[in-house]
Length: 171
Image (cartoon, rainbow, N blue to C red; front, top):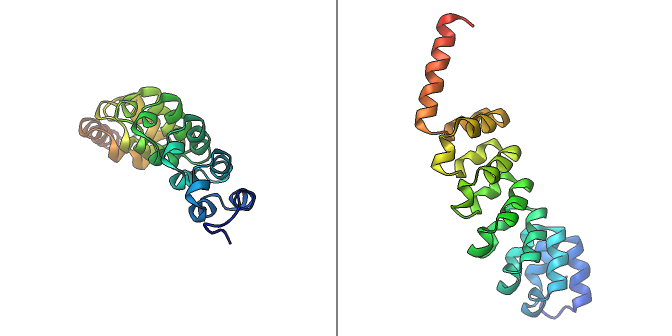
């Protein structure tokens, strides 16, 4: 059992088995130890939540964390949420990570399309402009039909009209 008195070697061994929980119980000193935190986030990216603020803002540690769990993006500084490479790594792992990217990156077509490859409903977190972009919406709907509810109202109306026409014509 890890506690505030556990040694670095004990914590390093524990985070390899259960990254987040082990880091949570580690001392503040070890939560700020780069080796310990790096081992923890490689095992479970969300362990970043229990790392020191300094390491939550360490680009290399953050990249490892989001590559393991895209939701780890929620635990980083605004500066790193606006880092394109970090955001891309997060959404490639989990499209829902788009929720935590900066507003600028939620309007970045490439970042959003990468998120949609993982989860079509990540369209929910895309900028309004991209929610109204036919190609982006089609990419989302191809992945998950439910994503349509996150498209702009205008595109939803167009689709309803198209479906009505198809039903009337009998295609």
